[in-house]
Length: 375
Image (cartoon, rainbow, N blue to C red; front, side):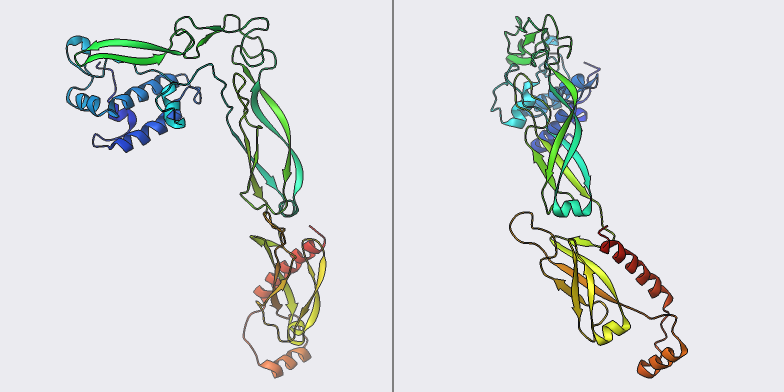
């Protein structure tokens, strides 16, 4: 008993931990070390250790005894939890999936795991949608043995030790009375089946790794972070169970000229001082075409104009968002002496440096040219 770790240490909680804290910690660790999820060599041992600690600390009577006596062997005349075998993988499924105290059938069909795939798409592909094809690695039911793990012409046998239940009962007489505990069957490792001759393809696992090509329909109007669920495209099930689902998470690349907020599109367009002062009709690139925008005389820099219906198709529902055009006045440079004199007469010397503004507006013009070309 001296080699046993303290149960509170195993669960990572203090001795004053509440029942809810103990339960939360157990759920987290049980998911982490469950042999169906964690394939590490020591995962099963750690799972059993966590299960043993939880079975004691979640029971008020056992916890009280443990707090008083610690790990004590009942065969030495003292009551305690130390001599019990707390194996049994079914309990974790009962807790997570509402087993209500019942044990799952190890031979029952089991649903496959869900998968997640991150897919990067271009800005306009997210706006207008597209059909793409992706390749994902996943486990599927073995075609050779049809998922039962046995060599063709043979079949798994029911375990004679546990009669197919996958569990064994361990009866112990303690100072507190007769105790019956369940653990995973040591003969079949909790599967309830014995495979005498294993399938040469999957080596008894019943499933194999494959690369699968899947067509994905990306709907128009999706945004960054959107998730597409593809039913039945996840990991293959066991013993005839259904496959899991595939969740595709979309990452949308930014556009050089257009920005997006929800279903609306935003862009910035430069105007000359003369256009803003006297008014003009300018050509504006949109996601689908070029349109004319009438700029009234006296327009100030930073003014927004709305192009109705030139935004993003609404993902759920009818209609389309709008495009919002922000105009920025370009400060004139390389003026002649005559032009400078006219500006002085018009508004006086402003004293502002035009070099930084010139560089900013040159960048806007470059982005706008690319948008006109449909890039």
